[in-house]
Image (cartoon, rainbow, N blue to C red; front, side, top):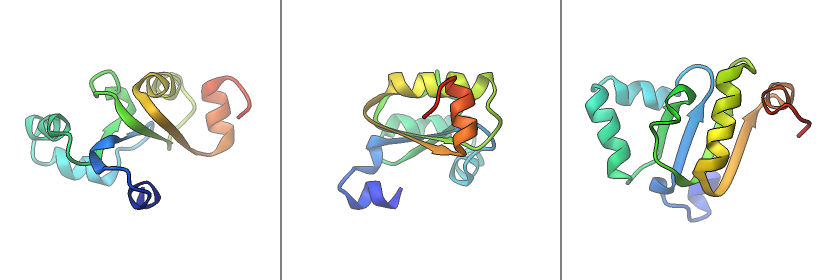
Length: 108
């Protein structure tokens, strides 16, 4: 994340999806309630963190980071597929290669 921001990417250009547990920042934002959490996305002025299960609710952003931090299951496969469609400029996938390959059904 720091590298993206240091390279000049605006925070509002970045979406982070997690396939396993929620990112700690998403947990923090959700502690203020669902309405406030989704309003944060609408504002579009900061990095937005979401669970892969909510990928169909997030708006596309130029940069999408997918953290494959759970099993290579249907949720991870859907998250990667949605991320490919949502990332307008750059898609970054992080995780153990065997989980990513299993979710994609190919060698990466």
